Image (cartoon, rainbow, N blue to C red; front, side):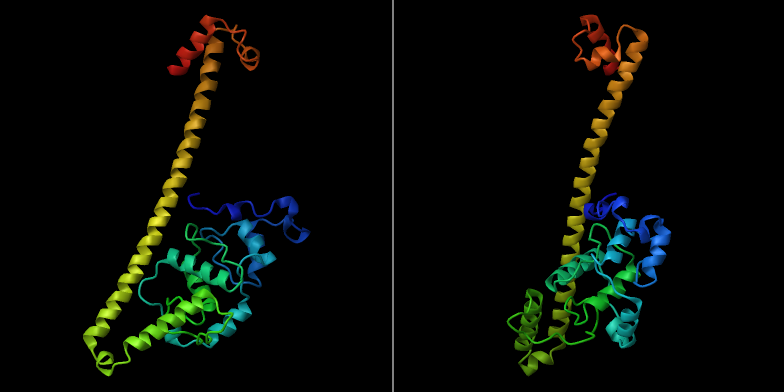
Length: 266
């Protein structure tokens, strides 16, 4: 699958699972994990058995139904409204970055392997409560003041706040609608620019993945051609046996080799 995370594919073999999950199929495992944690729909893209095991073991981001409902109950409408059209791949990339900076487990999804959209927006609001990523109209909670231990994202956020306060310290600037509109357009162009960059990364990733698949198919084709040409040639000339080829072909005559080469080219 294009863009599928190798980390998810090889997370845990069936033999390593505990008795609680070892004999469960994917749907049964989903029901077990979903009874406690908020998950994307069972048939959504990227929701694999390996991902479910990671959630159960606490190796990726997870939130209980209770914790999410308690948080969502406090939200106002403008705290849930998204800012324009959201590039889901960019959102996933930034959420994983934010989780890393907070020292927490990442989503279990990447920009190359996107989760279901509705689940993504819910966990984005839950994770980014101070709206440091600016994907929602209003923060649910204020960003804490800067301290020595503040992470880089928080420093950037406060730097932008300071820059905004400095630029609009002049009353005429604050009241200039044309200037405000220009800044709004600049912010929108910046979002578009970042979205295009992540789209370009995804296309490059898909291209690299496709080229790798082409090499595998080419190798497979050559292998099939060799096997079929040998089978046909062995029918044509019963003296050509697998044992002769396995032995390195030293027992093959010049005529036998010519037969194999001709049939292979055909």
